[in-house]
Amino acid sequence: MLINFKGVNLRSGQQGIFPSMYATDLQFLEEETEDEDGSWRFQLRFLGSVEVNGHKGDEVLCQAINKVALSRRSQKSSVPPPLCTVEISQYGIRMLDKSKTGHEDTDFTHFFALKNISFCGCHPRKDKYFAFITKHPKLYRFACHVFLGEKSTRQVNDALGQAFKRFYQEYMALTHPTEDIYME
Image (cartoon, rainbow, N blue to C red; front, side, top):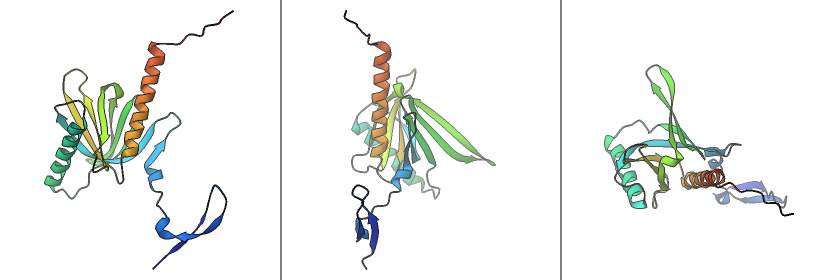
């Protein structure tokens, strides 16, 4: 059965009907929000963290994602992974995990400074998985933190890329200030 929708072209103002198969659910707009300060928020499921040998590379990232996902599947838990808000800014990644502990609802916040994040990305074949690698602030140790999105997590990866770009611009402006030179 063919279902038709009525729609309006926002550019031209034309109205008409079109087949429902050409409609897309815009729920993804709720998953990502950008604040006035330039930070992004995403709703993702936190799968877990695992120590890794290297600090960068798609191979290291994929191995960590596979290891965490396999570990979750082998537990055969009926409880889904916790839903958390991942906030990305030019300062780092803040993970707000709303979990039940005991009798009350508690918010756990984890912050990973951008200077300690060495690599991030989506799984190349399963882009619902997003992960980033952090280095220990004092020791030569690395951990990979793995998340699962309802849809593709490429927007999360792009937001983190923008955050690194802003961080670098701010760093350059601070360490190499430009001076105005006036010619008379």
